[in-house]
Image (cartoon, rainbow, N blue to C red; front, side, top):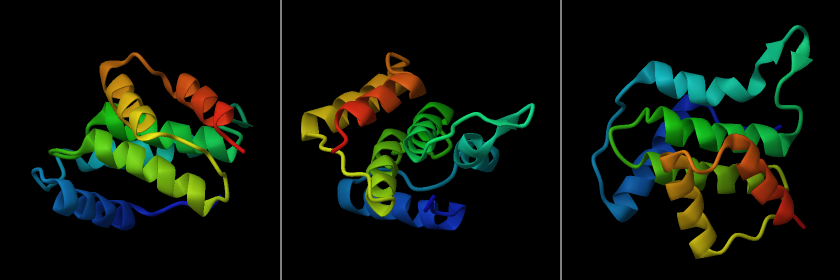
Length: 125
């Protein structure tokens, strides 16, 4: 799976803020590390998130829910989800309204990582 490292994610976050506004900075490095590494965890030798789409959904979920940045966590979570889908050649068709609903739903706890994976699967070509 093609992914981005922490420094690349920080740069994407800054670019997102440059375009839309908001406070730059990391609130908690450990929460950022956790969001980016969680999809690659195993338990008792089993991969917890076996597909690329499941890993991507978990990264987006972790960025929004862990709230590692001072601002723009919903934006970077959804932005990175879309970027990783594209980098991994997973064509998914999300409208602007879908993107907003995903960000707000993840932040409020109304959308889980599993539900996000279902949304990705439904919109995958």
